[in-house]
Structures are given as structure tokens and as C-alpha cells.
Amino acid sequence: MPQTACSGSMFTTPSGFSPHLACAEPGEEEAPQDGPGPGACLADGPAITSASLETLIQNLVPTADYYPEKAYVFTFLLSARLFIPPPELLARVCELCIKQQQLDQSPLDTAKVRKFGPKILQLLTEWTETFPSDFRDEKMVGHLKDIIHRIAACDEAYWKTLNQVLQKLSQRLSLISQGEESIVRVSLNASSISDKLVAFKTKPPPIQKDMLSICNDPYTLAQQLTHVELEHLRHIGPEEFVQAFVQKDPLDGTQQPCFSDQKKKTSNLEAYVRWFNRLCYLVATEICMPAKKKQRAQVIEFFIDVARECFNIGNFNSLMAIISGMNMSPVSRLKKTWSKAKTAKFFILEHQMDPTGNFYNYRTALRGAAHRSQTANSNRERIVIPFFSLLIKDIYFLNEGCANRLPNGHVNFEKFVELARQVGEFMTWKQVECPFEEDKAILHYLHTAPIFSEDGLYLASYESESPENQVEKDRWKALRSNVLAKT
Image 1 (cartoon, rainbow, N blue to C red):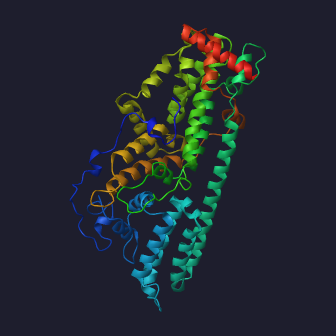
Image 2: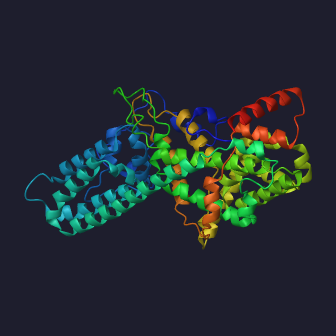
């Protein structure tokens, strides 16, 4: 069924996360850490399970002889924003670097700085590549330039590297802005709801195009749906998964969370949920619109084949949207129409996406697609587009089921390792280039074709197959009067 973005009400069953993530004893204390050591690295020595925020920041800071594991960098940069805004975090990192490397003294220790310089540049590069939206804040760029200015005297090449980093960052930020503008345009077009079409549905010729007139090949439509999905995924930043569920930390002494409502940037994530809902309603509209039962049955069979092709491609989000649209009540009540359609394949697909056992069948299929992606030799085989609502639900329950801080005030870092694992897997999948050629006519139709509201769908359904009881008859009469009054 259609989804609601980032709301606890959309979730029904917990899933997947380890219950031991926040099981440290209330009085348990962390062994003191004076600086980066084996425990800072996720791969070497014992993994960090909890630590003070200050210790975690210290473990992020490179030195002449130390650089944190890449997994640690991603995990901490992803989760730290729950406790400290990115500009303050970068300022703290730079402050520690200046202090530890004595960058405020003259002359500098050239040999030491030349060992440290490449490491701080690597950290800043990873930050700009993975979380470019953080650098929309001018303070971030200011901190970045300041720390490089301090070490550039030892090697002019640092300025060249910085300029390359800033150039690539500018390109990424430009793409993000273009993506957001595109989302706004698409959302304006996709908001077209045309219930008045129902009142004329029995009048030839058709007053609107339908999907089969635009594309009658299920595999081609599945390819174009994959284009839309990957385009949405491309714009979702990893930080949106954290910011979607940000809330006041009861153990934080400040009065406000790190993100006010204005600063919670989840627009790409929310746009992706809106796309899922639109596809649900588009499928239902296409089925309910034809006046003849035979035509409606043909549309059902067509979308069953599209759903099967989506499954084969690895596009589970479009697959679930199609199944959800076909299971909406205005569609499922069309018993005479369904009796004329060949539905064996539909029931197989429904079984694959059955929510029983916390979507066990789907998760098994997803693991298979993920394994295929890891060993693939082509982008076609690398495609993995997860059922997005379930991914969000998993992250929601991880967030709700495990505290951000332990009772001793330490950050529950083990929770964020699991969060980073889930988000990191998604980040790998979203980087796949779509291997299919674009069909602009089909993409335009997917984004702009008018869709019915829920009331419009019910009215179209009643016009197709008469109400079966008094409740349906009364609703039909009310809906018909309502729509005719608007036309």
C-alpha cells in the first residue's frame, strides 16, 4: 500500500537489528583511551562498542603515524551529526590537528607535517565525497581551507590537492542542486489528479492516453521504471537516513537537537516515497480506467508481466509498488475483471513479497540479488533496488530499539556500526549506472500522467463493476454527485 515518509505509523513489525546493541550494563565504564589506538580501528583489535563523544572525535583525527579505518570514518561522520553539527565537528577536528601537530608554531616541523599532510587531506577528501551536503555550509569550506593553509608552507602540492578537492566538491554540490530542482519540477507535474475523467470514462474516444498506448512491452517499461528508481536513489545522501529520525537526546545537556526542522534535509528521501505512492496510484488508475472488462484484464496481465521483469532486474521497489497498486481495494474488488485475467504469475510475485516472517522471502531474494551484484561483470547484473519502505522501517526500528547513548553518557557506537552497515550497503547499490537506454516518452508519461485519488479510484471501480451491497451503493452515489459537481 502507499507509504508515508519517515513516520512511525508506517511500521508494523520490528526487523533485523541485533537486540544486544544497547545491552551494556548501566554502571559499565569504558577503559580510558588517551588517543587513537587499536580500538579505534574497526578491523584491528577489539571493535569500539561505546565511547565518549570526545574519544570518538579523537579517534577520527589523523596523525603523522595514524589514520582511522575507512569504515570508522564513514560510521562516525554518519552518526556524529546526532550529537554535534558537522561544522562544529570539523572545527574540533581542525583544532585537535593544530594542537597535536603544533601547526600554530613557527617554524613548522617539515618532516612531521609532510607525513601528516596526506592523511588530513585524505580525511577531508573522504568527507567531501561521502557527505558533500555538509559543505553547503560556508563554515565547512572555511575550516577546510584554514587547515590546508597551515600546512601548505611545507609542500605547495597541498594547495593543488585542495583545489582539486574543492573543484570536485563544487561539481557534486551542483549535481545535488540540479537534482533537487528536478525533484521539484517532477513533483509539480506528478501532482496531477484528475478524478473528473471518471465521469466521462464511458465516452469514446478515450480522453487520455493510457500506458499500453505509450508502451506495450513489459520489459521496456520495467527498464524505464528502473531509470526512475536509480535517478531517485542517486540524489539520496546517507545523512538523510539519520536526519529522518533525529530527535532530542535525553542525555544531552543542550536544549535542542543538532537539527531544527528547517535544517533536517530529507527532501530526496521524501520525494522517493512520493514516487512509490505515485506508481501505486498510477497502476490502480490504469486498471480502473478502461470501460471494458477485457481491456482491464489486459492491463492487469500487462502489469503482472512488468512486475515479473522488475523482479528479474532486481528492481524490488517498483515491484512492490505495482503489487501494492493491484492490491488496492478499488482494484481488488473487480472480481469479474480478475476472473478474466491470467493471474498465476501474480500470486507467485505476491509470495515473493509476502510480509510473513518479516518479509523473509523478499529478504532472501534481496540477498541473492546483492550476491549477484558483488560478482557481476556488467551494470545490468549489479542492479539492486531494495523495497525502500522496508529499508526505512529497519532503520527506524534500529533507531527506536537502541539508545543513542548508554546510561553512563557514552555514545552507543555499536548501534551506529549497524546503522552504517545498512546505509553503506544502500550507498553501494545506488552508485550503479543504469545500463538501459532512456525512452523519454515513457519517462514523461510515468511522471506526468493524471492519476485518480482514492475516491476517484473507487468511483471508477464502481462504474466498471456495480456496487455489491448497500454501503457500496451509498458511497457510489455520493462520489458520483461529488465528481459531477466539480466537472
